[in-house]
Image (cartoon, rainbow, N blue to C red; front, side, top):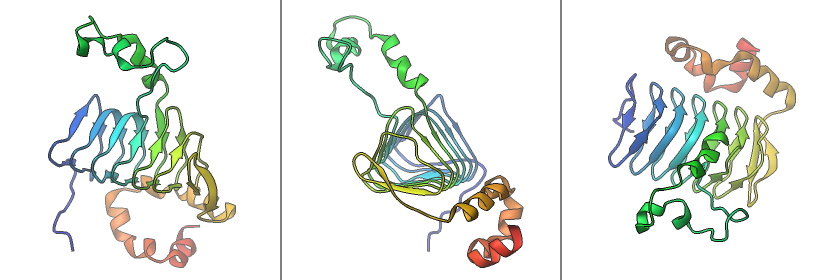
Length: 203
């Protein structure tokens, strides 16, 4: 059993870089991660070695190690050279960086719903929206929006299954359990451990 206990202040491990971001309560940002321009919802965690840029991440999300969200891109079709010397010019002593080049990533933010599980080494490309309760398989490259409660995998990621029937998924959405307060969730913990009990009480 883990002795760590999360609290209202985010738990941030060593060698983590966080800029322009808002991190919620009962969250954990594990070692060697980078977050820039991120809204990170309550009770969500990333398991380390993650790179997350310009994204809105809901509550209760589980992000496995080495997952990348909204990674950088290269000017494949718009410039003669796609190498980053054309926009990270200062690295090479060529002059100022091209600040405007980076605006596209802010404008193509990723939006991830609540209770989403993103598997080890997955990559979520710019502009993608992932619905509540979805699962992204390990190593997947997500290039298109993901429906709520669906399971996607592969390169590029494709829908391979759903977690629940459409009826059950709609009823879960109606409960909005992710917005329940701390004490309510604690009181109803046993119901979360028994699907029949949860459905009987809250549907």
